[in-house]
Image: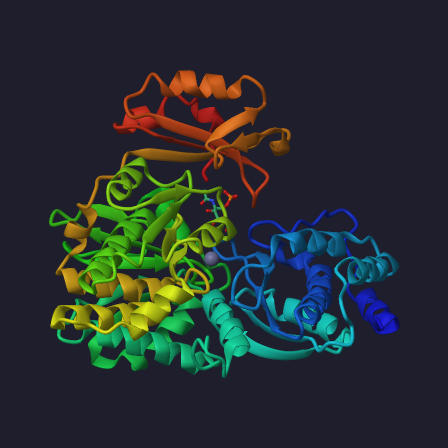
Length: 531
Ligand code: NG1
Ligand code: ZN
C-alpha cells in the first residue's frame, strides 16, 4: 500500500507555491530554481512510481535547466533505455506538481496508482544527478525526500552532465544482458567513448587541439576528466570552465549564445584557421565554428553536423558492403536550414518532425541508422538492433570492407545513443574530419546556409497558435498563415513559420531567404526581442 503518512509529512516540508502553475513540457519542469522545491519532492515520488510501474527498472532524474540563465533550474525524468519520459506520463507529472496541498497530492498519487495500474509491491530504483547551478543541492535534497517517502532505492550520480545520467540509466538496466551498453559508471562512460575515439583516430594525423567553450557549466568537469583518457591522441583546451563564479553559467558564452547571436563569445579569440566549439550548461548540445584565413567567424551548427556525419556513415555502410541491408535516414525540424535539407535530401531520406527531442528520437528509431540533430546542436545517431547485429557479425570479403566494419563499430561506440551528448558529438565530428582530411573550411563548404532570423514575440495567449505539417503551417489564428504566405512570396527562396514555444511563454518566428536583408524582412524593430 501507499505510505500515505510518510508522503504527507514529508510533503508538508515542501509546500507548493500557490501562485505558480507548473508544466512538464518538452524540457521537463523548468523555471526559477528557488520555486521548485515542491516539484522536486513530487518528482521523487513520481520517479519511484514510474520505476515500480516498469517492474523495478531504474529511472533517471536530471536536475538542470540546460542553457537557461543560472537562477533557473529544472528537472527531467529519464526512462529505462535512457530515453525521455513516455509522453503519457508528462500529464501525470503535471497533475502531481499542481496539487495545491499535501492532501490533494496524496489523493493525486493514489489516483495515479489506480489509473496506471501500479503494483506497489514492486521495487523502486532511481539514479539522479544535477548540474552546477547554485539551487541544485537544495533541490536534490527535496528529491531525496520524495524518494525516501516512497522507500525507493537510489543512487546519487553527483554533479554530472545530462548525457552521463542517460548513459547510466541505460547501462544499469542492460547490465549483464545481450543489450549491455557498457560499464554502469562515469569511468565506464569515459573509457568507452575515449577508447572508440582513439581507435577512430589511429593511423590518422593527430588533429589540431580543440578549444572547448564549456559555458562555465558541468561540461567543464567532464571535459577535464576526458583529458587523461585521451592522452596524446587528442588535445582539448578548455575556456569558460569556471563553475564557481556566481552568475557565470551560460553568461555570454555557450552553445545557445553562439547559435542565437551567430557570433563568437566575447571571451574567445580564434587564430585564422582555428576550430572551436561551445557546449551548453548541461553538455547535451554543441555548436562548432572556425575562423577563416581572414579571421572571419563561421558557425557550424547542428545541421552542418548532420550533413558531415550522415554522409560519413553512408560512405562507411557502402564501403562495408551493407548498403542493401542498412538504410540511413535523417530527421530534422522546421528550424533546419533550407540549404541543409536540400543537400541531405539529394543523398538520403529526410523527414521533418515537430520540435522537441522526443519527436526526433522516435522518428530516428524507424530507420536502421537514424541521424538527428536540431539546428541548435542537440542530437545523436541511433543504430537499430538489427544494424548493430549486422555490423558486428558481417563477414568482410575485402580489406576495404573489413576496415569499414571496424570503423562503423567504433562510430557506434563513440556515439552516446541515449541522448544528445556534446562531448561525444565533438569526438564523432573530429573523427570524421580526420578521416576525410577536412578542415572547418571543407566541412563548411558542404553547403552554404541560407541567411536566417529567429525571433520571439510575446503574445496574449500562445495557445491560440495551432500548427500542422510538423509545425510548418498555422491553422489558427485564422487568416495568419495566408498573411505569412503572402509575405514569404515576396522574397526569393523565402520560407517562414510561426509556432508557439514549448518551453517559454512566447511565439517563435523563423524566416530565411537567399539574402540577409530579405531574411530580416520588414519586421518593425519594436516587435523584436532577443531570442
Ligand atoms: P521551444 O521553446 O519549444 O522552441 C526549445 C528549442 C528546441 C528544444 C527545446 C528543448 C529552438 C528554436 N527551440 O524549444 O529545439 O531544444 O527548447 O530544450 O531552438
Ligand atoms: Zn542542454
